[in-house]
Length: 138
Image (tube, rainbow, N blue to C red):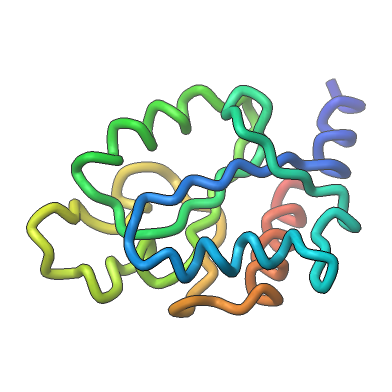
């Protein structure tokens, strides 16, 4: 089991879940995949299924409509799993704080391992949050 944990730490797979909002944070998450920032140099790849993902990257405010889907995706991820809240919307609801359909920050519903503040955060900050998450994995 130690070898599997070591290999997963060296090559984590990401699942990006966008709950809506302005999509500014989603653009920045996609920008980390471009050759300019290139998170693949750290062995990180994006996957489209939660069953293969190690790290869940959440952007946007947590709404009533997306909350059950988000919890189901989190439960489908294999252990050990990490969650990163990217942007001010999943951290504090951001500009959507007083909206009728926003049900609160992300850490109220699932455990969050790293926060990347900003509206939207820079790709360097997202990479820093991902690397900090990997250090916690040890």
